[in-house]
Amino acid sequence: MSQDARLERLLDFLRRSPTPWHATANMAARLEAAGYRRLDETQAWRLSPGEKVYVTRNDSSLVALQLPREPLTALRMIGAHTDSPGLRLKPQAAQTAAGWLQLGVEVYGGALLAPWFDRDLGLAGRVHVRHPDGRLEGVLLNVDRAVAIIPSLAIHLDREANNGRAINAQTEMPPVFLQGGEGADLDRLLRGWLAAEHDLTDIEVVDFELAFHDMQPPARVGVEGELIASARLDNLLSCFIGLEALLESDGTQGAVLVANDHEEVGSASACGAQGPFLGDVLRRVCAQLGEGGGEEDYLRLIQASRMISCDNAHALHPNFRDKHDAAHGPALNAGPVIKVNANQRYATNSATSALFKALCREAEVPVQTFVTRADMGCGSTIGPITATELGVPTLDVGVPQWAMHSIRETAGSQDVAHLTRVLTAFVDRRELP
Image 1 (cartoon, one colour):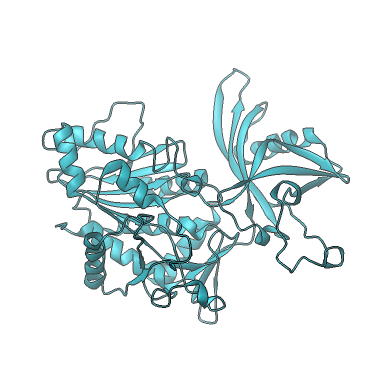
Image 2 (tube, rainbow, N blue to C red):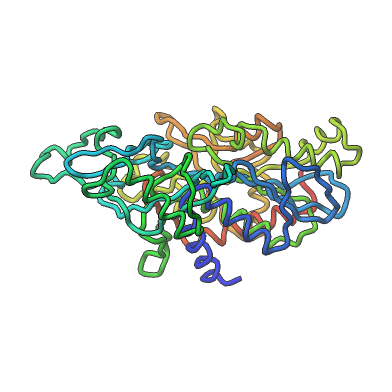
């Protein structure tokens, strides 16, 4: 697999995945093209050894399974999340000011707000409609053109703008949307866009979950193309790499890719890592393919399995080197990062870290370690939550990146291949320590 071809596929995936629902749909389409069969949680499952299957929940989370031909005794699990911080429309979004229709927004997750100003913004998400016969249907919407902008206030009117002034999300972040527009125009436009994208006519818009997204396309940046710049690298980059590894594996071992929604807001949902989604799927699989199918077999399966939780790591920033511990400043294009925290904000321990280092050695990939400064707080991810919910031995790793939670983030182009090779080696590994 050429690196350029993989990177072009990544950029296309990022461009076509402005929301968790779109990311999940794109991952599902690629799995089906590779021979994976879709399962329905509301139906009885009939699973066979050697099968490849997947299931979604809420249209925004996904679990894909490569079932072994041998008895199911251990699973190689890769975890990621589909959501990213940003601006989402409020239910009653329409508001008018100074002759403009604006859309009220709610900040989703811990977004960096300043980079959202003066960006060409598209609109995407999930819309539920009612058909003339009363049937409700959820459909994806992607208005893939600039329909809104959040204009900055001129420096002449705010001389303190460069002095660290706080941004008020309620009053300063609503994008301008339509000159002379009124509240009814939003419903009219949504119906028009749904007709154009899905040929849906004579429908009523009942509800929606919509978010703004940056219209600047993903790109390779740098004199030698060393960098990838895009929205939503955290954490669609890990979703893409996990999927690449699963599809490039030799298919002989039991493997799982789980991509949860709602990580950026705590993971406490039916389809989040703190919810029962992954556990529900694994219990149903074990009931059919486990050695005995009972609770004892499920617990043995979990303890024999390993989880690599993939979520991007903070790379050393050339302009802010003092924000890192001097011995733990990951570099772009220098390999995946093992994330460690003594207070269990990351799930890594010495045993799971040793496994990952062994995988990197086998794959001939460099490896780095991140620990936050002792005088700074530490973020977290799905690793500790999944470990808590399932009890599976887990570690947290990620591709190093800059500008985490900005509208446009940056990572190293070589690190995509680095982590893919390691995760492929993990999925193919016959014995797990």
